[in-house]
Each structure stands twice: as structure tokens, then as C-alpha cells.
Image (cartoon, rainbow over all chains, first blue to last red; front, side, top):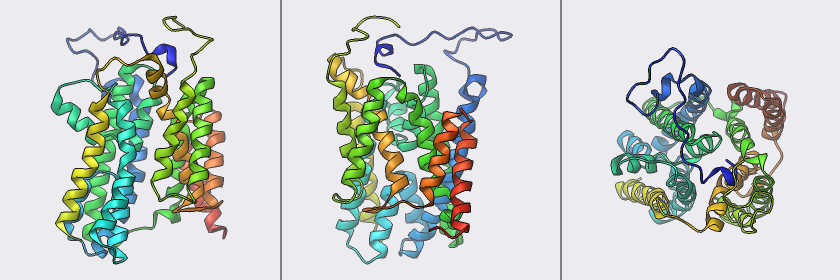
Length: 256
Length: 102
């Protein structure tokens, strides 16, 4: 989304040929033809997440957690990197406090995503609390890759729920089976950065977006060797400060 | 693994999300803050790309992921569908590892 698009109100629903307008504000997301690519993308991403979830389930049980603890963690924590980090610290003989510290640092970036998503997701309090729980790398990135506010909200919910279902199903399977395929063998560790490339692409349409992306990446790369895991991503958010100078090419209030 | 860890982590992780979610929601903000917030996805998602491509823990390294993600960049640039981008990146990375690059 470009800066000057933000102040506009939501796009009204476009009339769809051959379909009478129902009372609902928009067609059910899963049936909207324009959202089919988002549904396909979220299922693809969900499947990759599911394989990692299986390996998390296996790792968690082998680090001494019960099947119930493992599944409760995925249901309630729902932040893959934090969970993997906590389990690996415990598995290596670390204390509860050290496991918690590292995992919470990793969880903090969801708070940064939530600053953006909280301003875009509407609804009653219970729905917004669920939305907060679903605010993770994948749902945020998929949402911001969409052009209009309706599609952004739909993409957030579809991706968040898809990843939630796959993450928890995979966790249960891994915890019960105790053996997993190694995601690395299948190159699935490259699936996530590849997906983020596709998702960040629309952000690069504006000069400011390109500067923020460049600066954020450089900050992250520079800080990875010197700061604890999870902190460089938080510091990358400082790149948004390139938004401070006023926009000369499209003054406030102009329409594109 | 203790229940204390599981439940404290759950509470802490949700608190991170919820605080961010409700902190600025529905509040009119100065234009400059709005402009900066709109750039969070560009900055952080781009950082996720380089972190997931070039780092393992605190180490920076160039391994088969770089090749896979490089192919993904070309695919995105050529407007390939999302599914193709992701499958292509995983396949190229897996093949490079099969070929002995680790």
C-alpha cells in the first residue's frame, strides 16, 4: 500500500455479474474468485508450516515434553520460532528462565506486526482478540501484499487460520509419531524466505518502500552476528524512520 | 519441560501480540507516525527474507538457500504464481543439497 492510499475509506463492494448483492458486506472470502490466489497461497504456506510443525512436535517430545504440553504450546503460544527456541533450550539442559527469555524475544516481533494489523482489522472484541493471536509472520506478510483493505483483511484471516490449522495438526502428528521427515532435505527452509520475497514485492513499488526494505535488510544482516537471535528483526523495524521526511511528490490529501 | 514454561510462554507471547494490536488501533495518529507505520511491512518482511536466507542462529552463511531464494526473486519478478515461487525455491534448494552443496 502506498502512503497516499491510506486515508481513503474502504472500497465499496464491487457488484459481481450474475450474483445478486446479498445483505453481507462481502462474499464469503473462500468463494470470492479474486481471493483464489490468496487461498492457494495460504494453503501452500500452511503445508510447509505443517512439515515444520511435525518436526517441532518430534523435537518437543524428545526434549521431555508430554504430548499434551506440546499440543497446548502450539495452540496457545502459536509462534513457531519461539516454540522451537524454547524446546531446544530445554532439550539442551537449559533452565525454564533461559528458555523463556529467548522465546519471548522472538515473540516480540509479533507485537511490531500487530501495530500495523491492529489498525486494519475491524470487528468486535472477541474477533480482535482472535486476530491478535493469529498475528504472525505469514498472516501479516500475506495481508500487506494485498492492494485494498477488504482483500487485506481477508488475506489476514485466511492465512492466519490456514497456518493455525496446519501448525496444530502437524504438531499433534509429530508428537504422536515421534519421527519426522527432515524439512531441510526438501528445501523447505528456503520456502519461507521465498514466500516473503513474493509478499514484500508490492511494498517495493514506492521509493520509500524500497528504502525501508533495503535499510531493514541491511540492519538485520549487520546485527545478526552481534545480537541474540530474534533481536535483529526487531531492530530492522527502525528502518521505518525513512518515513519521517514529508512526501514531496504526493502531498497530504491528494488522490492518486 | 514444565507447565510453568508452557503457560508463561503462552501468556507472554499473547501479551506481545495483544499489546501491539490494541496500542494504536482506532486512534488518529500524526501523519508522520502513520507514514512510518505503513513502512513496517516493507522493513520487517525484507529483513525476514535476508535472515531466513543468510543466517543460521548468529552465523551468516551463503548456502543452497541463497540459490533457491535467488530463483524465487527471478520468479516473482517474472510474475510467477505464489505456489510456483515457493515450490521452485524449495526444489532448487533441495537439488543443490542433493548435488553435495551444504
